Image (tube, rainbow, N blue to C red; front, side):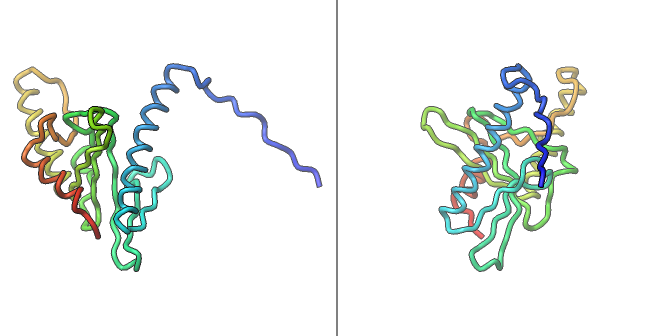
Length: 171
């Protein structure tokens, strides 16, 4: 039997500016997904990260019995950001099992800070951010909408609730 190997891949060089930016961005996202999955596992849940670029969710989580589950979309930042980019409000999944976990790295504490929103809370937060931005567009201080969830550098009242929700969440 003769086995032929595929031709070598002609990929973009690893040291190119584009690939470095994209891979750094991807690595931050992957780190966030794995942090969330490990934390859920620590809580006694089965957390399965999905393959990259699945648009609906990043982690499937279940209790050990398999009687409860949730779909988790993770948004991650390597810095202490005030907001997280999100899809447009109409694309935010709002099913009863859809959850968004936002994590940002707190360098001074060497840890992630997490926020958990239901799909409905995430959609409402994106709509609220876009409503505020539309006022600025009308005033000429902004040119277009950028869907986000705002948590603040100093936590907003909503973000305090979302942080508590992440700390206490379980199926």
